[in-house]
Image 1 (cartoon, rainbow, N blue to C red):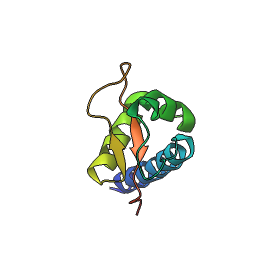
Image 2 (image 1 turned 120 degrees about the vertical axis):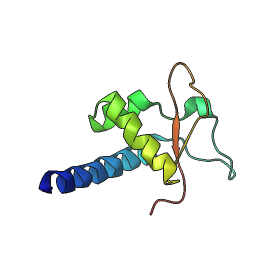
Image 3 (image 1 turned 45 degrees about the horizontal axis):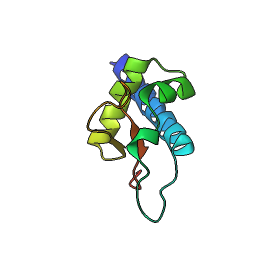
Image 4 (image 1 turned 45 degrees about the vertical axis):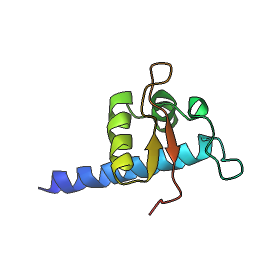
Length: 90
């Protein structure tokens, strides 16, 4: 039981690190328009930035998409999904 609580805490910490990295390396919107999806950070870039495995990173990012904290491309670009932070980061 304690292990589950710790793993939830670890998941939260990893997601917060990913959100911070995503915010830091994402291109900035220009005139309230999103930048082209081709220049959004890739899963691999984010995984390297926070030193988490690529599959774990994707899992954590998809959970953040469900909670509307980040956006994801609807298709792979150069064999990778791309990610972008939303303004709603509660």
